[in-house]
Image 1 (cartoon, rainbow, N blue to C red):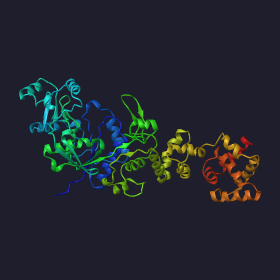
Image 2 (cartoon, rainbow, N blue to C red; image 1 turned 45 degrees about the vertical axis):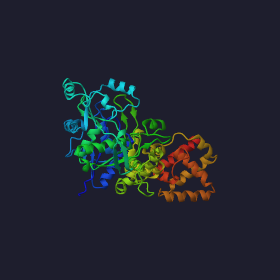
Image 3 (cartoon, rainbow, N blue to C red; image 1 turned 90 degrees about the horizontal axis):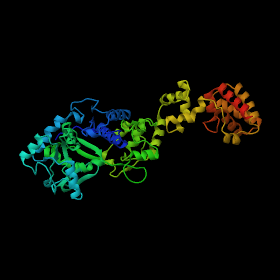
Image 4 (cartoon, rainbow, N blue to C red; image 1 turned 180 degrees about the horizontal axis):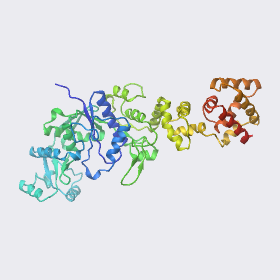
Length: 505
């Protein structure tokens, strides 16, 4: 038997911002497809017209593009299996609805919302299934003539799948192994609604996966209860031989306590749960995003990949190519993964260290300009090279490096009391002359000259260096003193020391 080409799909609903758990699902599909030389499809599941949110589809595409998750076909990318929006495929679905009705695997139901509510009050834990459907208003309890008359008169209806009770349904899951569900616990799900002439997720999902030749369905754990119905539908349509293999991913859990990670957790603990900033068109609420919060896309990808999957060793920092090479669904966890947002910061720090100074400097430039600083790119690169190991976000470079661009006008009082001695002004006045006469003004030779002078005068090395740091920086922080003087240059270093002497005496 010829092995099928790997074809997987990411099929979000355009109902708002893409949750970070959905991003992980897209990433795992991408890694699996690329490792197996397969295709990744972007399908938009927009059959629930009441929940559609303008702008959500564009947001999803922009977010995944930013993260480097590339699609081979689908909405916005084209392909031979389109259209890829379910709302544009309604004529396709109607044919399969009719097929299920003709084969007695589905029936038409006319129950109104009021009738369903009344039945729920009458029967505790009511479920529309084999035990209750003969009490309801549907084509199983009405004659063919009555059913056709109701349809002809414009009565709204739904089509429900007809599930026979007491059958064990086997779902073979690549992560969880064999899952067995008895059909008696399943309800007769709605597959189609006459109100908008659109199918529900359950039907559209199966038809599209079949017609688009999807080989593997990798999706969140929340869809596991739907899997038995999907197995049945493949059988009802006669497609059992082409049924995709399922893999249900574990949930992303709250950083603390139990339960699924939510936006509320992010708001409470101060981290994003969306890849990009989201402006809700209905409420006007703005939610933070990883991009706008200063995360690098490579760091977000690496962080997410290791939430619920491991490469089988202790390696943590992995490029996209390394993730593709190592990814194995068998190493996905069956249990949920706690969302450690501090680890996300750690990954961001690692990727800042690995990035070329020129690239970091280019990202830092707009932040400098926002603070009214215009600096030569070569100088910014030099500063970034000295200081990037001290930050987890590029935006934090300003607080860490501002003294390289703006001379201090005030001096930290606590540091002044501790580091500025009675003789500091006199000693730094002498030190200025040492600096002025010294050439070349590089790190090593300037440091050697300064130490030789301090030793010859019998001064305390620490006192001189601490007072100099306060003069150059305005507080007790920063890298090695002579890294600072070399970067600032002779004239600026002397100017800053002179000003400190005048102000602090």
